[in-house]
Length: 344
Image (cartoon, rainbow, N blue to C red; front, side):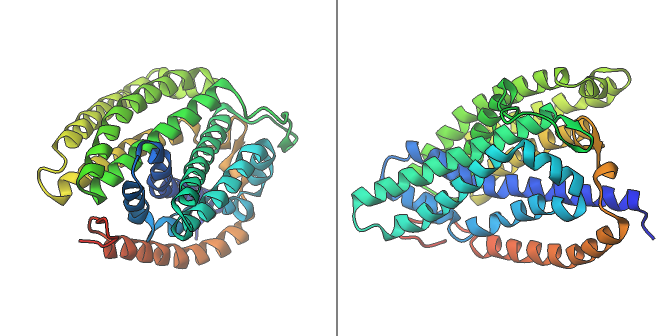
């Protein structure tokens, strides 16, 4: 029989996993919109959109699971995080709606002029949604002021130099994911353009990762203790080594793309996902066991045990189903996309 402490830990892992899956799946989806300004021709933009058309809507399932899951499982966290991040979260949702409408309408435009404006709307929605996610992440990591179990900060506390830094980093990261996805799923001039973007934006992303990593220990004393005190420094030492190895493998894979078949084109995408996973795990290690840093732990915020058990039973059924149909869709549309919209 699982106790409330263990159940809260399981739910924290499930919600964290759902958020990471959203970042991975909708990340390259948003990255396509971020790359739209460098896709000059209508044909390239059409092919880029067709690569995500079968999967983009399902990718946002994980955002619903990760975000809405807070309300019944960690109600105190929900009640403090939302007031602190109302503005960026509302902007994100509006941008996702705006982007979804433009995604559908660009195929129904009556002429090239209308389609160009829908393309701009798709790109703008992608930038605003990603920027809002990055700002929310930065404000969350920096810490939320809580007094007597309620948010005690101001309306603009979410807007700080660090949150802007994380927002720019996330825009770059999603752009890199989008580039790697296009390398995997396209060919010809679009593939070459995506490879050039994956190379140049990958360098910029590394600069942002370094900047965020250097800044984070100075945001909170608990972060410094977790990474810079002895013997924790010994445990953290392999992280930069692994990141360096993944970086070397990523840039090598980008240069070798399109030379050894479909796996060669997919390899940069896989390696970039591993880099995202490494940074995400580093963030989790920094924050654990706090779900609202720096004061509320996952056990402080957890719902009663009976609620957690009831919801976990439902999640045990639904999550495997979601994973199965998501995997099947990606398998079904596994080939490269051609100009005529077909897969091969």
